[in-house]
Image (cartoon, rainbow, N blue to C red; front, side, top):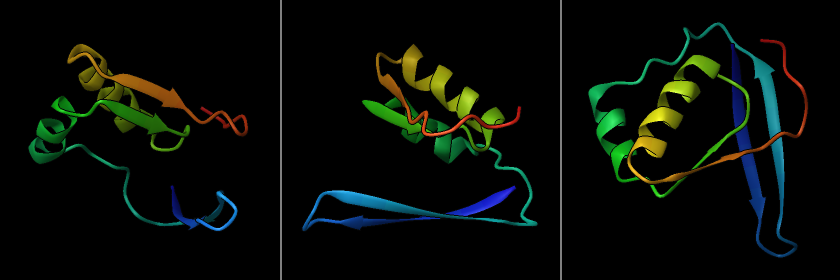
Length: 77
């Protein structure tokens, strides 16, 4: 697992992702997450937490939303 922080810079419209290994357990979508995803218009995923991301994608697409994949790098799995 990884922890990630995304820094957004409005002055030049850039972003910086800081990713580091973590010992946190895998992300599991709760009922609250799932309910919020039902109203989501655009979901951006990046290849991390792939099981939860796949579940989230199915919910968003099943309710007419779009999924954007940030394919910056190839990840194992």
